[in-house]
Length: 161
Length: 419
Image 1 (cartoon, rainbow over the protein chains, first blue to last red):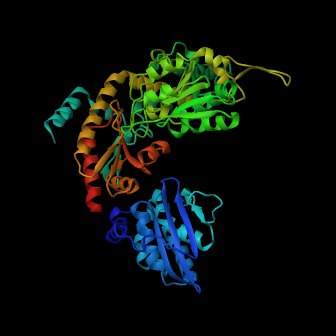
Image 2: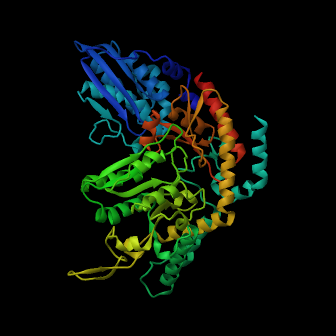
Image 3: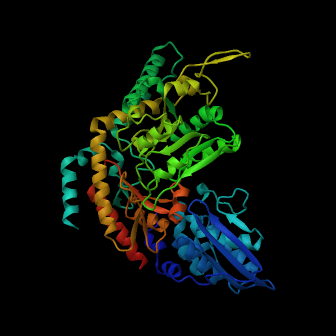
């Protein structure tokens, strides 16, 4: 079991308190709503992709600190990147958060490694991955995604997580 | 700490030998994250004393066979112990007859049994079912399924800001289409104790039967179904120190007899041919298939254990815990208690400003403290209070004032991390 200090550390608490890119974008090229029905968390993600590059991104919603910090750090991490680079990062983040890959084996993860400890807290994995799940939904024109939807390609059952 | 709270703490520990009781519960000696376990999630499931564990082992070691079938020694022993467990439950709730106690897998199955057995037979298009805002999903969803199937309508009793049912509104909901009332005895999310005796009398005066969801009440207060005069009363074994997978439905005999079976199969029949099947008498009519025999016997041992301590003593100790905890938690700036009903069971739902309940739950867990966070399977209550979720500490008779202090210290730690 990870010490909570490895999860609730300064950078996560800071992004929770002062989330970056918080709000909505008027004419996004991609948009999705993410929902975790088990805890009621929901967030929206708006993205502007221009010539394959993420020019702007914003999120908004009600959620726990883990989810909000994850969303905030996601927006700062993918802004300015190409869609392909962002999709690679989504896959690495999901693999790390669900414990399939250690953060050392995620070459692009960088400071997002602060979320590695969540893989030891099965009930909190979904909090961390909801924003990434939602960004993936936006890219793939899935207007509403849920951490519980069976048909969702990103669905990660608790036992797996 | 005020003088008043200090007095409460001392009085309670002297009146009730909680340390001797705790010695019966091996799991309470656990350490979680290197801290002594502080188990405050009793409304979700309570822990099991050694006496019940021993009873399960004894049954499985010396008494197990299938019941109501064989003529051999073990089958007779198992049958007799199973039926003795039924009589223990009958006495526990003061039912008039043992055949009024049906073993189910828990409260949820008991309510579904009434929906299928009574509702599908006696509730039709245009009829109305009264439920309350305080219901657990288990006493909402089955009735929605019935309403959809039959074209019936659900009416909902509202609550005030304290989490108390508005009884005037309840009474106004009755009309000549009202066919059924489902009400929880104690709210699992807020702890409110509902005035069910009065509500039942009002419904009966209009010829309407009442089902009481007793899942949160049975572990904490003496239940007398004849005094309440309820038609159905349901609760789960695992919330009162018994095993999971077992619970009971109490039903008045003439109502149970008028109902259709819920599940078909062995044990619920008298004779079967492909032309005609004759159903067994109650309670067997509702107990198709091999029941969880050991769990039923374990539940019998659990109610023996609780009765030996005394439900009144249990209720008094829990009320002391609730008063002390409520006083302490209310003294922390930035913490709000949800559910301030005048009559409350030992459930403390709270919110900490600026901290999501799930973060509270994870951080308290790091201190070895188990609380529930979320919507508590009572989303209508959360919607009414305009919160997505709460943190909930729920106490049992084996909890101590020191554990309340640990909870309060834990909440202060959470606040410190988030400032």
